[in-house]
Image 1: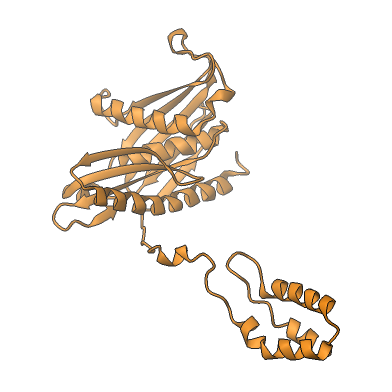
Image 2: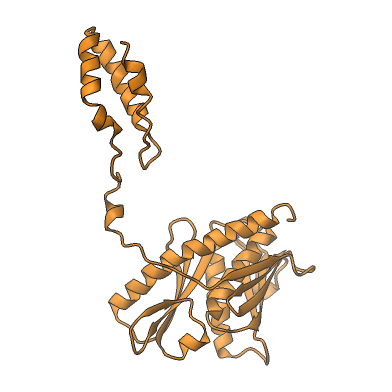
Length: 282
């Protein structure tokens, strides 16, 4: 029995799921001591198999070894919350040189023709940097509305309206993703109940090289054959919305979707950092 205590102190290598060899060893030790009274035989067994218990196991999840690690770099992101005094929540977001301001109003009383009795109606108004809104700007409004409506728990506010106003400040590529992300930050700032947060990532396929470039700017977009913008939820990383332009194959689509999904993790981490920064202020 004298050698059991020093042996126990060596079994502290953790598993990947948070367990430790020490816990498994203790369970085996208790079972062995209850089943036999031959202490010397147990001590000899523990000492002989000490190298087995000390060895650190490989990953339990074998599927993780087959998943390739893709380097996902996005342009630097900066954000400021509560920049506007009138809206219930506001956020200014910069992704590279692309800048967008978003404001949330609501839940408020809707117009009679737009009222939905069993849930809140989500309205989006997108304003370009100059001139009146065009047809392409209405498409941006559609994607923002569909993405944000999927995230908001609209059943909590029946017969009301939630208005999302987005103002373009500067466009240097990835404008649709920047507008969706700024709208999500403004929703977080407003305190409206959400099922999950959303993150949008833009990527492109170069026409000459076929390389997939994440979060391209206008210089890269000049040589783009295809441009994708994917929106993901924060829980299962499922696709909420997808906007595509250009020609592509099924394999290219899946490759870009996988890379954007992995890159969306950095956007969700950015959300957490911003919320922690403004937690006391909010």
